[in-house]
Amino acid sequence: MRPSTSVLVATAIISVTACPDHSNYQSHPHLAPRQTITSNPGRNATDWSYEASYNWGRIKPAYELCQTGTQQSPIAIGNNIGLSNYHHPNFTGYGGGNVTGNFFNWGYGPAFTLKHSGDDWTDLPSMQFDDETVYLKGWHIHAPADHSVGGRHSKAELHMVHVTAEGHERAVIGIRIDPGSSDSEFFAQLPQPLIGFNDTTQDVGVTVDMRAALAEVNDLSEFWTYKGSLTSPPCREGIRWFVARSVLFVGVEQMRDVLRVCTYSARAEQEVWRHEINSA
Ligand SMILES: [Zn+2]
Image (cartoon, rainbow, N blue to C red; front, side):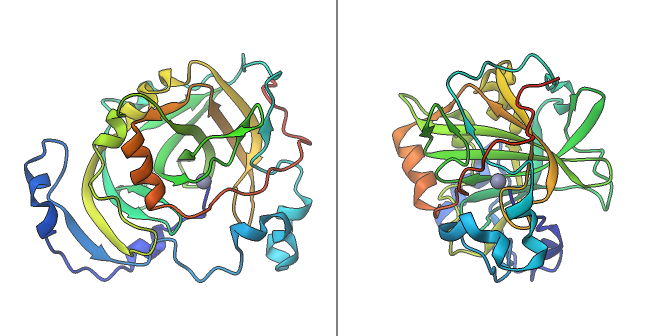
């Protein structure tokens, strides 16, 4: 997952225009008129790259955890690791699932940040696990998948980032994405064409049904869970990961549409140490 970009969004230069090539979306029942703002979401000049993700710790002291951390993500999930019997996520707080926010590209793939009021995160869809409640802040896509299962990486991975009531990143749902035999309803609702990795515009006021993503992986009825970290610098720990056993299958053209706007964004897998995979 990536660090917060909400501050950058707040400083965006707003130039609202309707996209002439996609005016048909104005009549789409799930989508607002396509309005764009020019911004710089997630485009801070980075001093790290995915191509050298095995050595982020040497870049500067602030990235030390990338090298010394005991619960770093992602990890390889073995075929012989059973599913979790603990920490079951509960999504009743997601309500109907429709959320409004800004759709953009975080520089590596499609991304979405939910609209919320000020520093109050508690009006966002909530997920419960154990005795904690966390709130959906946004999502983004990596390609190929960060996590491997049985030695295999899916074509892409969706990260649904959840924060505490204070706005601290606390839990991420990882959903593997692969091409299948029919289209995904979740992906079908996204504004087309998807925003490219070099495109710094955003679609604002887009409504997305996030329950559709969960429904397409059986509401995480089967999952692996572990104690992990952000998967990009500064690699901060304290993140509970939920990786869905079910793969979210998309149509072949949908898969190509996603891959077309992605650049390589999978961190080298980390050795399992104090991750307590599936443990109580
Ligand atoms: Zn991520």
